[in-house]
Picture 1 (cartoon, rainbow, N blue to C red):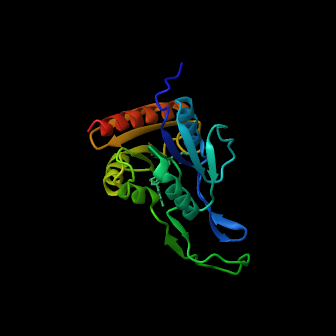
Picture 2 (cartoon, rainbow, N blue to C red):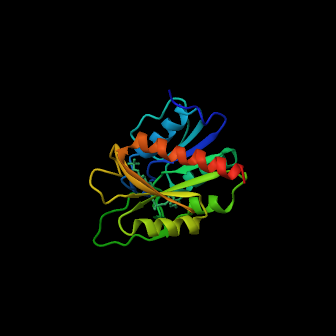
Picture 3 (cartoon, helix red, strand yellow):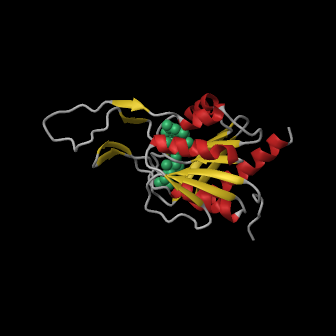
Length: 223
Ligand code: PMT
């Protein structure tokens, strides 16, 4: 049987891509399918947690026991995360949030006429904002990082800069893993360790990430 070690815990999961509108018919998006985040939601439910799943646009069916909050843009994702953060014991951010959004959103479909420039402005870094304003002492915050080079050192940098408890670094340049695939592999970086997660299904990886979340919760509580 599955251990019910998350009963009474609220887990906030973000999943999928964000869509940043350019005009009424176009957006900037990315290749996240939502599978990794939905797997975390499913795994947390199996362990007895209450799950709030904040999701960008995906083609997936969410676990029926999850409280689903659908969003589209990085800004909407930020607002939804902030609204649910005070309730959360564990936050796991698998969403591939846009780093940039269009500076101006055209009300009308942009017409084709030769070369054009699109002005972009940075979005708010939601993970960094959470790291800086924990509302409950034992809140555990875990981010993901999609890297194509220097993964572990970039993950260490993100861990430090964003003030979070762990970064799950997946090398998205590896064929058949990461974006859209049912499988993944990662190195999880915490302040004190590096945990190698060999290739496995996203549901299996989700269980490993939750094992760490449970362990971190216990260690923070006993401090
Ligand atoms: O959805 P799948 O197809 O299953 O693919 C899974 C995945 C590859 C998308 C997932 O495993 C993953 O790596 N997600 C994080 C992707 C990402 O955006 O990485 P990043 O290094 O750009 O961001 C680092 C962290 O900061 C992430 O936790 C992200 O949610 C967060 N972030 C980023 C930008 C922003 N404006 N706000 C954020 O909170």
